[in-house]
Amino acid sequence: MKIEGKEYRTIWFENNVVKIIDQTKLPHQFIIKDLKTVNDAINAIKLMEVRGAPLIGATAAYGLVLAIIENNDQSFLNKSAEKLIGSRPTAINLKWAVDRMMNILSGINSEKILDVALNEAKEICEEDINFCENIGLNGLKIIEEIYNKKKDTVNILTHCNAGWLATINWGTATSPIYHAHKKGIPVHVWADETRPRNQGANLTSYELNEEGIKNTIIADNTGGILMQRGQVDMCIVGTDRTLSNGDVCNKVGTYLKALAAKDNNIPFYVALPSSTIDWKIKNSKDIPIEERSSDELSKIEGVDEDGKVKKVKIYPNKSKAMNLAFDVTPAKYITGLITEKGICEASEKGLKNLFK
Ligand code: MRU
Image (cartoon, rainbow, N blue to C red; front, top):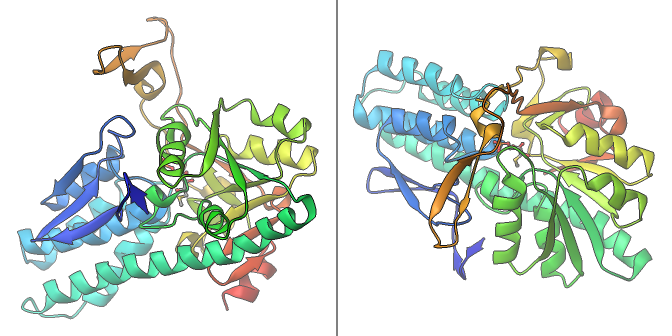
């Protein structure tokens, strides 16, 4: 998708270096950063310079490529794989991508291993783009249906950033929106600010602006009243881990939006590539929920009147703060899962029908 009119992907490989858009600097600065070592990749994931389930999976895959360039040795590769999987706990894509890479690399000799790794990392990215595009085409049908009934702008609420910046291109939750916009359907997005890191404001609104899609940032607690007032036609969110029973783990606050949507009879969809499905964990209580530093809550970054980026503390010095990064939305609140293979019920039966 575009930034200042130029097409970008979120990650690419050039001259033995992995290039990323540093998302901690957006929206005030657009900086392309080089990742040269596997530790650079691990830190980029931990610090959320790259974030979003599909993108951290792709970064982990490229992290293994960097590990091979650094030190073409099996035990270094194994340790790197472990560290990459541990760099963030909740999104299943990290483990999915590392396992996929390690499987394909097993038994490959050291002369060929770099080429094989690089091809597979690129393939993971291409596949994600293809999946996200298909999610868009499938989700477009829902938006079209609403538009055909309403004959007016379709208002869509989304949480966090499940946009192209969270994937390689297109996004998951945003892909149906981009496809609707391309088709000439008038859409408007309510972008939940998404405290504490403000991915909705800093990333979703930013990327929609760059593509010319109307959007309004709202405080996280505003969705409910907008739904009661009939100003939301549908919700679409992403997911970091989707259980086979249809429960969805996504950015904290997603659950509350799903409850409000249910109470107001508003369709609540989750968009996902199959790489976020966890077929093993059966009970959502077993999902590892990331707890991040409370500094992310108590300090906030912005631009001062002179255009300088500054971080300021906003909480009382003596107050404690807690920063859980994800929550689980039970399948019963989800209208449907929009996947690359089609739309299904959020249930074991629904998912198994699509993914035999
Ligand atoms: O903590 P983040 O910014 O990595 O969280 C991202 C989300 O919760 C997204 O909604 C999710 O990864 C889906 S991305 C297509």
